[in-house]
Every structure is written in structure tokens, then in C-alpha cells.
Amino acid sequence: MPRLLFVCLGNICRSPTAEAVMARLVADARLEHAIEVDSAGTGAWHVGSPPDERATAAAAARGVAMRGTARQVRREDFDAFDLLVAMDDENHRNLRALAPDAEAAAKVRLLREFDPAAAGAGSLDVPDPYYGGADGFDRVLDLVEAACAGLLDELRAAVPSRD
Ligand code: 4NP
Image 1 (tube, rainbow, N blue to C red):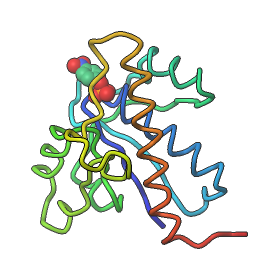
Image 2 (image 1 turned 45 degrees about the horizontal axis):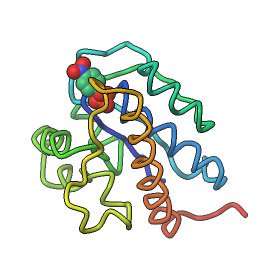
Image 3 (image 1 turned 120 degrees about the vertical axis):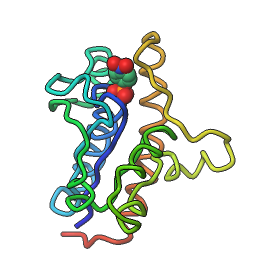
Image 4 (image 1 turned 180 degrees about the vertical axis):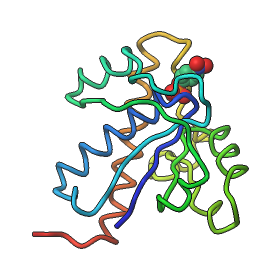
């Protein structure tokens, strides 16, 4: 059963957005029994906080419900999850530095690696929307939706269907 942990800096904007979008795609595909999703942040500033209201509003406008409480990523997450999916290069570097061994480090991926349309597009970052305007949160959703669809396609090939 693939267990996915989406990771950004604060765990209040990008990674809870990715968690919610992926949960929705997984539910639509009737794969809740087979794919588990969670999110965390590399930083601790917002631990205990709900998702950012701007992110929640942008997601709600697309019919995606965000929930949860921010937490910081921990070394045990490398045992508890099969993939740790970073939103940007900085998250990716920090996660690899936290990984207890090479096997754990190999579980760290960049989200937009899974977006087939992003190949060759230069940076694969989902840009941090925190200090910007509402359009940044819509952009996060565009990037996250495309990449999560690609990620689900890869996982579907590996998990059994109930139908
Ligand atoms: P996130 O966004 O990493 O997508 O949750 C951020 C949230 C908070 C901060 C930075 C980015 N901050 O500096 O407090």
C-alpha cells in the first residue's frame, strides 16, 4: 500500500494543498483502501496551525476540502511512508539531509517530477505562495493538480483495484 507524505516548508500552504488534491483524486478513483496521504513541513513555525485561509479558499473554489493541523517532518516518517514528496528543491535538499540512510533518502522525490508536461520545463519547484497574492495560491493548485494526476497514474499501475 503506497503511503505518501507531501512536504513543504510550513505545512500550511503547499503540502496540505497537495494532500487534499491527492486525497480527492484517490477518492474519485476509489482507491482509498490502497493509497494513504499525509503532509508535513520541514520547518516548525506553524506546528499546530490549520491550513492557511488563502490556500483553503483557493482549494474550496475548486471543490477541494483542506483540513488537518500542521506538523513538522520527523525521521520516523522515512519508515512510515513510501514516498516523501517535496514541493521544491529546498524541501528536497532538507529532506535528504534528514534521511537516516541511503534507502530513506531514495524515498525523497520532487512533486513535479510526476507531471509529464513539466519535463524539460526548467525549475520543478511549486513556488512558495506565502508572501504573495491570491494568484499564487491558484498557481499552486494548477501545478499540484497536474503533478498529482501524474503521480496517481504511476501508482495505479502498481496497486490492485477493487472493481
Ligand atoms: P508552505 O508556505 O511551505 O507552502 O506551507 C509557507 C508557509 C509559511 C512560511 C513560509 C512558507 N513562513 O515563512 O512562515
